[in-house]
Length: 293
Image (cartoon, rainbow, N blue to C red):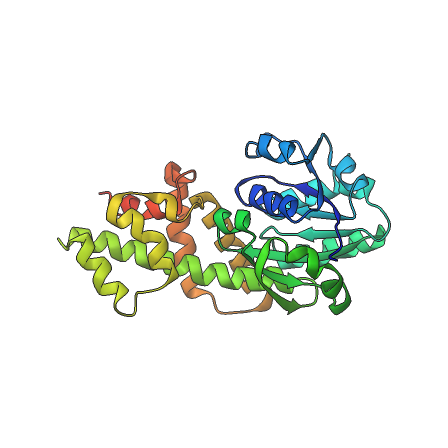
């Protein structure tokens, strides 16, 4: 029989809500932090979840604390601020960071968690809120072999594919590499779609030609509903988060001395769109924004 865990969640937004749904479906006991950024939680409460008012309380009630927040500043705040996770962390408890974060910060966080008597792994996610609710996320994990083996059964309750990337920090490094490629392709494809429209090409023909050739793939399928019918729901990821992830990638590339000329151009594109006030728009809408005079 699979072990059931006492899990605390911080961050019940689009992805976190899906993870919470999958955890409850798997029979785990769940508490979560009440926060205005959460999705509606009535369904979680009806399924037996408990709502708590501080990160400290969440840690006190949990064997495993899952963080699903925006990025490095939010992770550091929820762990280390007054009333934070570290104040309530139980000896031997595990913190699983599912956010997208700067790897150098991840290593420093892991050291502070260990000094407080806890264990830490980064378990960066790919895929969408739909797969999170279905228990079909992809996870990229940075952890010791022993901790990965111990926690994997819990991760499997909300994931379809789990890759152990190496020691702590590896998950976040690989996630940034993944997102750089994914969001870089998105920028190229959105710019091409905007140029195609200006050139008088029918959208359906454009989609057919790319889909049958070198432009086919996951990114095209995410943008297809918007290009074909102005429906941005194929990629529910804000342009503000897009810029954040490219910024994080460039910070990592600079830290390791990697070439980043293309990444700098992609960052400049996303930064310009955000500075024009479009950070709350969903990423597929980049096609229309780039087509504006």
